[in-house]
Every structure is written in C-alpha cells, then in structure tokens.
Length: 393
Image (cartoon, rainbow, N blue to C red; front, top):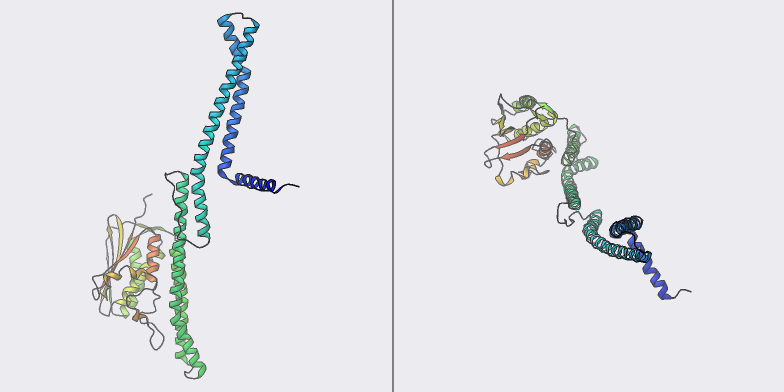
C-alpha cells in the first residue's frame, strides 16, 4: 500500500507534469533543450570521428614517428580535452538556453495570460475592461492593441443596443397608447367606430411601421452594414433630383426652394440613392422648420478639394449648444412639436426623429462629414455635407 506521503508526491508530480504539458514556457524550454542536446551529440560524434585522425596527421607531420606509449598519452590527452571542452560548451549552452527561455517565456506568456484573463471578462459581458499593452511594437503588442480595439467596438455596439432599446421603448409608447386608448373607447362605446377612428388607428400603425423601418436603417448604418453601391456621380444631378422631388411639398407650403450649383464640380464616388436619401432628409427637415413665406437654398460647391453640399433655411434655427445633439437618435430641439393632436397626428409631419442620425451614418459610410450651423433661434439653420471627390482612374 502506498504511504500518504508517496501519494502526495505522486499528485504533486502529476500536477507538475500536467502544468508543464500545458505551459507554453515549458514547451519552449523543452524545445531549447532538444536543440542543445541534439547539437551536443552531433558535435561529440563529429569530434570523435574526425578529431583523432586530424590530430594524428599533424603529430606525424610535426614529430615524425613517435613511440606507442607517447601516442597513447597524446590520445588520452586529446580525449580528455575534448570531453572537458564539450562539457563546458554543453553547460554554457544549457545555461544560456535556460536563461533565454525563461526570459522569452515570461515575455510571451505574461501578456498572453493577461489577454486570456481579459478575454474571459469580455466574454462575460464586461466590455469596459482592457488588456495591458506590452512594451514594444512586436506581434504581442499588435495583438493586444487589436484585442482592445475589438473590446472597444463591442462596448460601443452594446451601448448602441441599450440606447436603441431605451429609445425604442420611449418612441413606441405614444402610438401604442393612442391605439390602446381608441380601441378601449370603441370597445366601451364611448367613441364610434367610424371613418375618423379608423383613420387615426391607421395613422398610428403607419407611424409604427415607419419607425421600425427607420430603426432598421440606422442600426445597419451605425454598424457599417449599409448596402452601398458607389459609382462616379455628378453632384449637380444629385441636387437637381432631390430638389425636383421636394418641389411639390415646398410649393404647397409656400416656401421658396432655390439652388446654387457651381458649374465646375468634381465627380464624387457615391451611392446616388443613399445621397438622395440624405438630401431628402435635410430638405424635409428644412420644410418642417421653415414657416410659410420662408426660403430654403440647396448649394453645391468645392471647398479644399472636396464637394460641399449645403441646405440653408430661414426657419426656426437651433441653439449653438444643441447643434451636435440633433444628430442623436430621437433627439428634437422642441419635443412639444411631436405631441399628437386630437387625431393622433404629430405636428412635425410624422418624422421619426432619426432622419439626421441616418443621414450622418450614410455620409460617414461615404467617407464624408455632416454638421449643422445656426446663429440661434429664429435665425435659420444650415446643414453642410462634405464628400471626397472620386478617384481618378
């Protein structure tokens, strides 16, 4: 029967062997030792096979014929010198290999161990953690930097998901409450199920459908999954098409819609449908916030070698501290404008509140920028889209 101390030693030995078997440092050490052993054996075999013959040849050339006893002493001296030299060389090689392996193993395994620990935390949903980047610019540093970039992208994606769910819950509350209220009133006999009631319900369901479509578009855009089909386009054609599509609505509201197009514009590599969507969003936004008798101008010019499209209105204007926030999902400068009236319709013409968010995502996907300018409330607003020119073949 094995004594307890023997079993303990056996368990510890088994754990040590298992750890060495799964340790990268141990594998590196074993590989280095194999190289040292193979080199030492090769050196010994070659020396034993070659050195005596070479030595005897030089002895005869230097001394001529020598007695057998002297030859034996010389052979013994040669063998001892070779063994001592091989022993010292092997010891130095083993020590060097051991020291180098330990340093290299620590240099490799420490960042990998830290990276594995952080990866486990990220897998559990802790996207804010980051792996410490090792010094230098080697492959481990590049790997760690790439992992941290991935963790940051996951954190941003998770934050967008949470924001989207919160925004969606907020935006769905109003139409659903309207639908539920009308259905309850009809069920209780308080309100007749006439054409007006059905029209309100249809308006709210249409609003829900449009909201779902817009959310799908903005989510794909923010995740850089838009299906873009860029090709060389003439900026004048893009502006003309957008203005023609919006002319009827502007005429109905008695707002002047003008254009100012530079005749010498470079072509841009763009998806005309997506850029048309951006211009339609900007023109729709200007239409909602410009009173009758106002003016909206769409301009196209070149600035610093890039195409600049702008939509300028004489409408309500935007406070300077809100110029960046208007591109956030569902953000509105005046939330009161979106309150439904007695028929359940929003005052802003039914906008979902993410048109500018979609526009920014589309422009960014084209490698461009978009921003808003305004001198304040009552002084109008100017939206500027900048796109890079098409590359010359």
